[in-house]
Image (cartoon, rainbow, N blue to C red):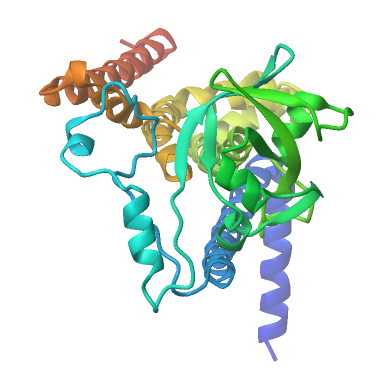
Length: 348
């Protein structure tokens, strides 16, 4: 029977402590909430990736595969092909026709992928992947034909200058104007728009919703870093002796005045090493954007190596990137020491 009074007394003590240390308690709760939310988000993303893989298999079929001369996440200059490409024979029409004759294959076609800008009356897109494909494109890639039509057999046989635009590209170039029948230029070649294609739905977002990939990175990095920063500041608050709080009360300061004038300046000074450590870790973690297809410094090195002018130069490029990271991280560490010396108020 003594158990319940003890529990009630413990709850009262805990609530009293939270009331007397509002900021510290709030930061602790914030860190826990953000941490749990981040874990739940990552778990949801893992489940989403799994579902996306199953969806891609269902769209493309369990026996669909690609034969490529060389795979690269960065554009390759066709006039200066890297050594890894030159040593491989190109895939040609005869190869596609030979595979199409196999009884085990329902379809085989020759596609071309280029990195080009699309232009319409002075409005241009960013450099993007442009496919030279046939009328089986949606059978392999999925998606929906929103307006117009796809290529006809006659257009494919005659090599007619026609193009099917992705929905976002059409909105970027034409706005409210109807794109069908208008002429766009891709790599200096004029092509007539005959259809508008929509990508398969993104399983992470409601239908019709789209976030820029940079915005997604900013949101995730902000939430992830906020959890660490909240815990760092909470540790600084916990490191302050009780006398500092009592001294602020003795001066007649209210809660927010004591936090602004007495507590937080000291807590931030104590937390400087941990804060700078978080900044350095965050700076090094920027290389993780390569996972979602954005260029990081290592990706830039890969793009530079694709140019034959840089053949044989490998360690110099990676060494330069490592030097940049070292200088930035070491500079932040030196600035941290400078701040600690400048704000030092104890007896020397």
